[in-house]
Length: 106
Image (tube, helix red, strand yellow):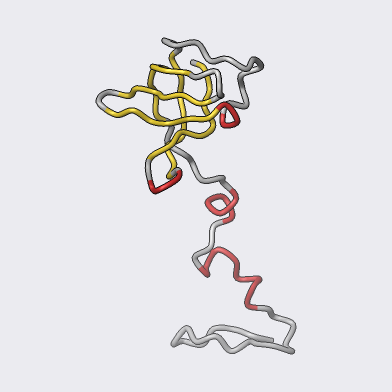
């Protein structure tokens, strides 16, 4: 049998049938926090250019961000209209320049 003594010292251990994992939340691990997927911040902008080669640029304020049609899974056509309002996740592209992925129409 294991129990806490007045000094709150753990007296149980391996082989006693009392496993430390049974303490659960007292170890500071919360299942609710660890099971949630990380929330990704999406940015928004307007398609300012699109080439027939499958790439283009999104204008977001003063920034222009490169994107490729392969990063536009929500589009069912091979063309993205200029002026379309989109949201995207900012990532690092070739050469360390900013690029957009997971581009979706708003």
